[in-house]
Amino acid sequence: MIDSTTHVRIARPSGDLAAAERFYVDALGLTVLWRTTERVSGEHDLLMVGPAGGGWHFELTHDPENPLEPTPTVDDLFVVYLGAPVDPALLDRLRAAGGTRVPAHNPYWDEFGVTVADPDGYRLVLCTRNWAS
Image (cartoon, rainbow, N blue to C red):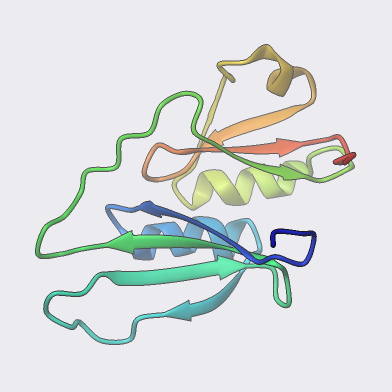
């Protein structure tokens, strides 16, 4: 049964796991929860990030033997609800880590946050609102 304690994994491909780590860990502030430490033929390289002790994690995958080109759309969003204004220093770190500030496809996100494309082109939304379930 799915309830509020169910753990969630969001997974997607990355062209460069080191660049993704710089963006999501060094700049955004997530924690590396697990990563592959050696290349194993026939298996994907993995980087799992998220909040320490959280009920979700974000898995980035790369298969060097059969690489997938990331194919983000303008509506592939990873939304983080900050409940506060976006710190300009955070935006500076995200840009320094390969991010690009972009206009949101849905104007709601421009009204209530900032959208940044990650090094693979997927969009991170830093929302100034709180999540209300």
